Image: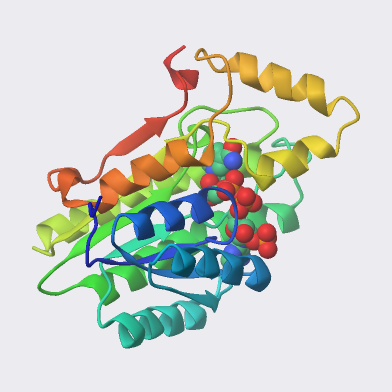
Length: 256
Ligand code: NAP
């Protein structure tokens, strides 16, 4: 209990999947939560869940690709809770496409939602967190930011970008003397609406799920809580010496 007591955390894509799980866990551990997402109904439902459990949270609708929106949500977080300590750049999308068949439009969409957003969230996160207390910026990459898949050209590019950009930002903050740590997290396949909706498109979705499970040496894909626990560690002061690192949580997927 209370591993992030009194800290204020902004979590993008907090209405569903990994972001929702992180919001619930950080709130249970004492943080005040700002959930942002496109999905207002589900975002408000997560806020209600947190409040029912005795926590504090607000929802702000945000498209993470827009810089004006970032300026607004950081200002609102500070206005509501008096400060900002943690930004979890989690919102993202995923779709298939090889280097040969991906259109420029699809490529730009992926880079905008998965990488421009992390740049903006890190930049405005630094500006919002900078000060006495400092804090932690956590960028959700993927195993696909470390190893490649022939069918995930744009996704690989976006998540690889998140990985190395996070290290650059970590060095900048450390060398500037800011008390802000920046790290990336690299989940294996996690059972969330993103994966569920993707598999639902295929008539052999069940077989595909079994194949994905088997690709993880531990024998199954992960749950949102597995990633939320990593986010909690990087958000808390237990990780005070950790910056510019990449936390792999993948059931052994990339160890092979
Ligand atoms: P998810 O269940 O689809 O949740 C993502 C949330 O982000 C959704 O609520 C979505 O809203 C929101 N979102 C999408 N585009 C947005 C935008 N432009 N602005 C604001 N919010 C936006 O996905 P997830 O599986 O939890 O994934 C979370 C992160 O983990 C992503 O960055 C993903 O790439 C990464 N990741 C996931 C897995 C996995 O296997 N699940 C593995 C590795 C990494 P809408 O539903 O309204 O679109």
